[in-house]
Image (cartoon, rainbow, N blue to C red; front, side, top):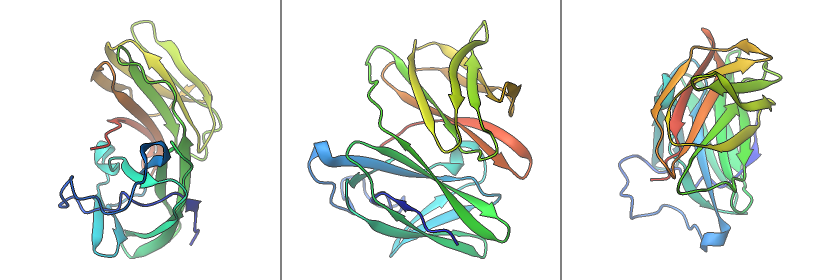
Length: 218
């Protein structure tokens, strides 16, 4: 089982935990980072840290946890379980980073993929859209959309993230791999000004698929 050095698993709280009772020290705001999990396996998954547990589904947005604040530089550990398979993940993040940890099947065991992002593009009047390439077999992912199927993001390598600001419009996008459509079109509906969104490309049992989530931190 592969162990990844990533960043603080402060987000390892159960969904029943109260929002105003943080499980981990986050430190001063300039040191805060954020971590979330993506279940890219074929079945439901759980992330466990002591008594805390996060349940992840196996369909679209249910695969993704919210972003949890963590203290930059701290190393925390969690175990991930999918059926009878499990793996251990260790996390250590840089200040201001947003980290997505993708968990996927590797034969009868599990593997992990780390996608790091240090966004600097906040604009209260526009929407922020990212493409996360969690498909290790897609060497160059891209995102097109809008009425003219315009290029939004290009040449996104595996395990990387690209982001840009767009107007807050009603938007349907298409993920592509090396110029060929990958997965079905993704209807993002009406984007909201000041909000962050992630379009996720992954490769599952049924082939490549794409979906989007709002990058929630609460």
